[in-house]
Image 1 (cartoon, rainbow, N blue to C red):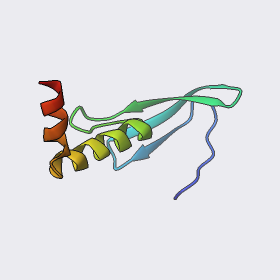
Image 2: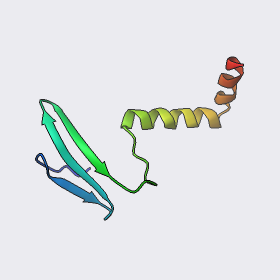
Image 3: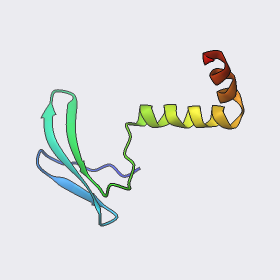
Length: 71
């Protein structure tokens, strides 16, 4: 992991086309802005993990059981 220190208004660039800017710092929360091409998916980590778990469950056939319960 690369750890960087940035102040409000400062940014970093990833792969020439993704820019992450520190917008606001309030207590222990940091608001960031992300500029990226539309085809680049951006998720909060907890949402990404949930999507991954649901995809794995669907591949294992558990998704079909969940659909049957709905019907």
